[in-house]
Image 1 (tube, rainbow, N blue to C red):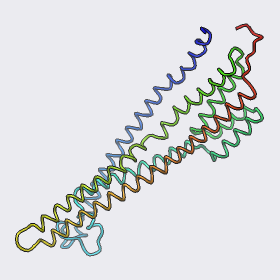
Image 2 (cartoon, one colour; image 1 turned 45 degrees about the vertical axis):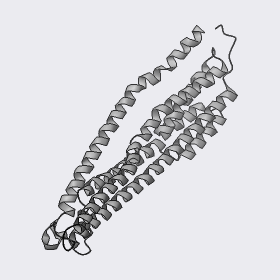
Image 3 (cartoon, one colour; image 1 turned 180 degrees about the horizontal axis):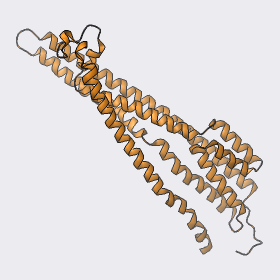
Length: 294
């Protein structure tokens, strides 16, 4: 029992040593998210004031007047102060979608995931572990990193003579699980921002809708003849904010589901390759050598 405990202790060291690395990545990702959101907000405000609010889009050259006929920049400007907030959310969805696309593309590696997994299985079938590791080095990416860690542990356990077969299989499985646990969070970072924007954008658009309707009914509630211009502007503000909120939310939902499906594909590939490694080892290796004293 003491010997088994001594063997199991070193296996926990890689995960403990890798924790600071994960924290560093998390800190860098958080900084990127904050900077991206602030930059999107500043850009949105500048666009709202200097482009959408330019006098050339309005009657008499004054943004307080009605927009010119068919000038959609002026129409969007009349959406009110909620518009730059919604524009910020739209830009954030766009920015984080690009960032996730690049990250997942790097995680796949240099070649097709299906081709990579097929090659690994072929080399495992002929017990060419060294060739399989070389394939991982060529592929690169998160999937290849996890598979490589399992293959290295495979070689280590194939040389081990003082452990039972089941212990060796569990050691390989644990190594694959630990490597997966270190790689997957990198793929899922910032997805929570996209999913949050999918809900918050709709609610923000509804706030703008309510504000616009308040202005519209205020124009109707005036004594004497209703203020037709105020009524039109209020309804316009309500509809513009509704459209921006729903559009941003729809884009965020599509992006979130797309990237989630891609991550699921990578996870499935990791599971498939890991299963092949474990099954191959169980079939070809792992018997305890009792000729050596424990």
